[in-house]
Length: 121
Image (spheres, rainbow, N blue to C red):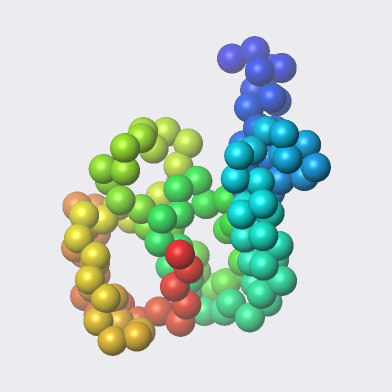
């Protein structure tokens, strides 16, 4: 890939999740994504322990979280290729039990009663 195109692609991806003023013209979800980024940045100091990011995609907010362990989980059949994604667990069935226990049946890994300190949607 041409180095210029690679730089443009990286810039456009950054503008999707951490939009600057230019993102106002490049990102149709500018206001929502700007608010998400701002609030995660503010409250990330309160997120500790093991974090499960459900619907993580390319993990655009992982750099804001200083948790002990960060697990990214996304659905296998999401309607797009996961070529740029950094997904740790693909799931097919997801059931929530109580408030702190999650049961995940995945084609890659199987967890039963995995206790988490935080879940991030």
